Image 1 (cartoon, helix red, strand yellow):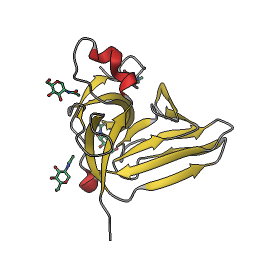
Image 2 (cartoon, rainbow, N blue to C red):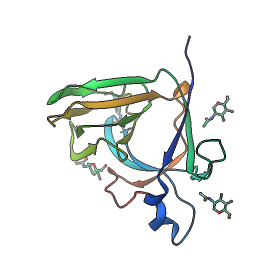
Image 3 (cartoon, helix red, strand yellow):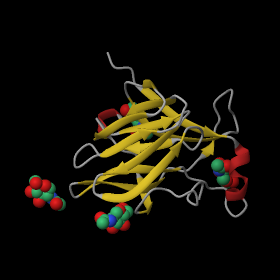
Length: 173
Ligand SMILES: *[C@@H]1O[C@H](CO)[C@@H](O)[C@H](O)[C@H]1NC(C)=O
Ligand SMILES: *[C@@H]1O[C@H](CO)[C@@H](O)[C@H](O)[C@H]1NC(C)=O
Ligand SMILES: *[C@@H]1O[C@H](CO)[C@@H](O)[C@H](O)[C@H]1NC(C)=O
Ligand SMILES: *[C@@H]1O[C@H](CO)[C@@H](O)[C@H](O)[C@H]1NC(C)=O
């Protein structure tokens, strides 16, 4: 039986100080792998749902955003210097790299993205059809990743900030 996972991300408030100086509304942004025409492509997504103040015990007052309902959480430990080859996202999902390094390239486009494991290691992988992408893990460390398929394939509402990977300037706009 599938056990739904209710995913919410919480960020340390220190990282939000700059964004809050003009407005207290902050949004999660992350790079996405999408299908455009028949090709995989990068986009920088900003979720439509803003961070709010959590009221749940234990993290009351923290910044929180509910992203999606998810199924079948998978925890992967990828060896150092691994090449995942060209593939499509098996299902529309969130992948969060917790450690290590992922290097993403496209077969028909020179645009590339580096995803460093850690707080910035979030990726939306929804290119389930088309030419796919190649993921390499070039570091000497294991890359640990959590993958969370979206329940019923429902992708969270978002706007596209950049027709390419997020470049760091889009964090917490
Ligand atoms: C995608 O590929 C199919 C099959 O090769 C082709 O019929 C279709 O026109 C292509 N679509 C685009 C948008 O290039
Ligand atoms: C922003 O301010 C509004 C109004 O004061 C408040 O309702 C909301 O919870 C605040 N949002 C955050 C993320 O602090
Ligand atoms: C998750 O599922 C519940 C129950 O169907 C629904 O009320 C809620 O809106 C869903 N949340 C999201 C973020 O889709
Ligand atoms: C490569 O991808 C970028 C970002 O999506 C796009 O702007 C550019 O036109 C693409 N280049 C080619 C040759 O398709």
